[in-house]
Length: 117
Image (tube, rainbow, N blue to C red):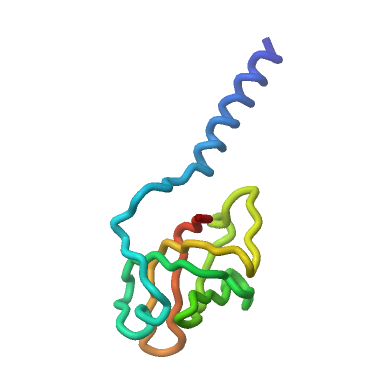
C-alpha cells in the first residue's frame, strides 16, 4: 500500500512539473518589434516580441540584448529560462515581454517568455 501511494504521488508530481514547462508556440497578436523602434517610440508597458541574441550578462537578472538595430538591457528572472536548453551569445532567441520606459535612468525590456525558434 505504501509503495502504491509513493508511485501515485510520483506520477502526479511528474505530470504537474511537465505542465510547468509547457509553452505556447503558435501565432501571436503581440507584434514583433526592434530595439531601435522601442527606444525611438515605444510606450511604457508596451507588449512586444524581440528577435536577436543575448550577448552578455550585466548582473542580477539583467542581460544585454542585441537585434542588429541596437542594444538594450533585458530583465530575465531565473524561472523564465527554457528548461534543459542552453542559451549562449550565439543563440537566436525570441523574447516576449513588456517595454519598461523610464523617465529617468535606462529603459529596459521585462521578459515574460523566452522562445528558441
